[in-house]
Amino acid sequence: MSTPTVLLVCVRNSGKSQMAAALMRQAAGERIEVHSAGTDPGAALNPLSLQVLDEVGAPTAGEVPKPIDAALLARTDLVVVLGREARPHVPGGVRVQHWDTVEPSEWGVEGIERMRLIRDDITARVQALLAELDIPLLERLSPYDH
Image (tube, rainbow, N blue to C red; front, side):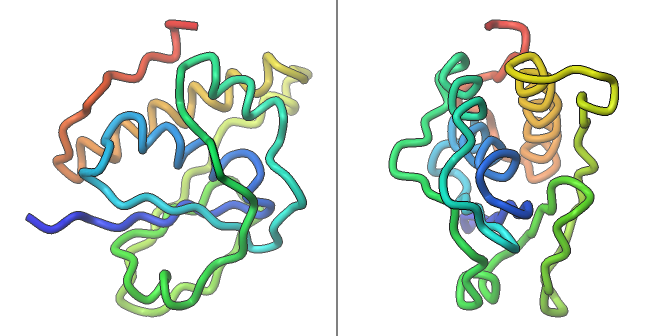
């Protein structure tokens, strides 16, 4: 079985797509090739995103916001678009999933609690995607272990 390539995309590539990539790498290791990018990349990773990933031991070392690479996109098996704002141009033949992730700020939840809820939502989506792709988990991610 070949290793599937997944590209996780949001607007800034500083929060949600970085979270999804870190959580996917943690859960699947080298069983999947994981990349993240933004349609309009920010300047730095969101510190609260980093904090909530650190709480669950999901590594982000060396990651920075980056744009979508056309060569990578051309060889990607699946593009996952996180949130409602990102609108990447994806060539025909590349499978696309849209994750309309929770937005706790709509309920008045802000700060670190907002990020934990987003992380927990993404964790569940990552686990479901890995199951769909039939990729065994190296580590069961639990949003309730923090």
